[in-house]
Image (cartoon, rainbow, N blue to C red; front, side, top):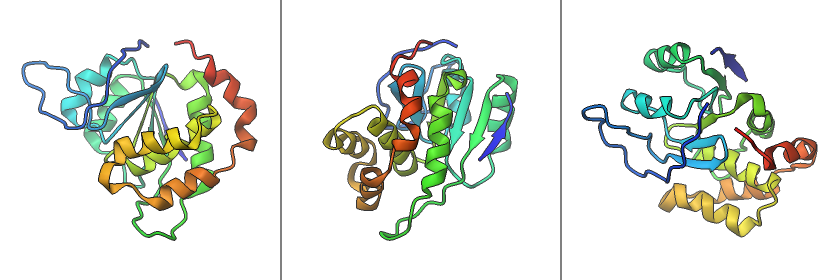
Length: 188
């Protein structure tokens, strides 16, 4: 994990397509949605999304891609006092490539730490890597697997991956259970 330095909530629904911000409009990132109180998910934020993201009062961003964060995004997070946690998970379309269990576990610890919220979880499109992290969070929240997979499919749509669902199903939450109670009673 790589951490870089830097409080209000808005209830919003999923946005599947990004449109350009015109005249100061609030434009959420692709695949934006609220996961839970103080926890949001999306695809990669573009500069046209920065005004919207400011309204969330973010303290942290969890970035799940291995590529360096773009300069404009770094300027945005620094100027807004947002801490960046980077967990470089390589994208994989291969059915037998393992998702790094330890990186998901470490990212979950960041999500579960109330001091990091409000926070945004994102990868490139907000589908697979973000879906795996949120799916594992849902297991901690004791969601049934059919509901976890339904949420994953809602974002991945026709590009859902059986390997991601298998990862979520087999992910062992036992080492994080002591942290999960603080998450279920979020106050932002």
